[in-house]
Length: 518
Image (cartoon, rainbow, N blue to C red; front, side):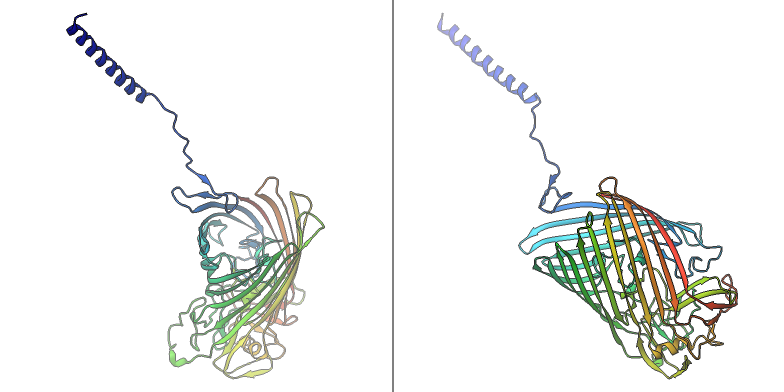
């Protein structure tokens, strides 16, 4: 073959081969290639089930919550018996709601990150609910932050779901707020700044500073008018602003045999001036009230709560619970203060008078800026008299099997006013006192109050994280004025102006609840 033809043929061959290679490469690039699997959500196994890594971070997150649908009978809220007249239940009037409905949605967010000082955690609980309204056609809704806190290196700051004063088994055997008689119950949470030290073997201790203002009861000045028994309207009190936070200490033991809880708190009773204020606020009354009115000295109050849990071999996760509280100048340590006001009042039948009533008041402190006469005593201007409150409960829960559980619970709680406070309160129950007339106001009048009660709860868990059940409760209410005659003032739209026998009253209530946790 001639040399020039060879050169031409070789060039064509090389060019064709290069073109074929280039074409083959282009076609190969256009063909679909199976990509590596991408793990968009990576499971985090450090903290238990339900946690995932937030993409692009080393922080784990769990989003959960639960939904509750409840039907209450002769109660409001979460089984809150009607000891007050606000919804007509205690008066047995035509505006009495025989049943009450509530739907609640909780959304919980829990994030955790490992650090050289331990786990950095944030935790929040958002609550949305719709309730049966009180005497109106509109739905009563609520949006609240039950918890929103940061935890790190043993420190906790923010809104906690409860107080460190409360024992950890408040809802172990019941749903209703009133069921754990004589014990604290800070449902809905409060702001805390706390440090917890873990000693090991299930033993821990906590020191906390807490903002208790939203649950604190008022301080009463005997120079002000006092509301009638059973009228759940603002009663003038004279509480002042926050001066320093509640100081709370807690010791807790959680072991195989059960658990132990011991807590104590100190609170400051600080009043505004020796004149009226608006209930539930720090605003002094308009007209004539100033710093010239003076004020009584602050008084420190507080309480102690002790609780035990004993695991028993009698059934599936059976346990016995015993707890009690003693407080001075801090009634919320003993008496529920989720919704009630400062004036008790329950009406019933009577053979001696038009009807019967049991009533009283619950104040953290009582004092008077003017002389008062009641219960056989003449009381001059006095400083704050701290109210004593105490009570306790016992409960047992039995697991019939993995699906069915039943509990029984009972307890008592008592308000005890000293002689000076009692005379001040009784002095308003004379003609012209504005709070109704007690036949024994100047002699044997006694504003002490006692509640005893018992109840039972049974629920069924047909599938995991679903409970369907019912709870019933009975309470008996006793006033130290039992046997006296109470004549109420005339109040439009309320009970008639008539003579009522002061008599023990019984309250029965129930609740049906369906709860789904996720």
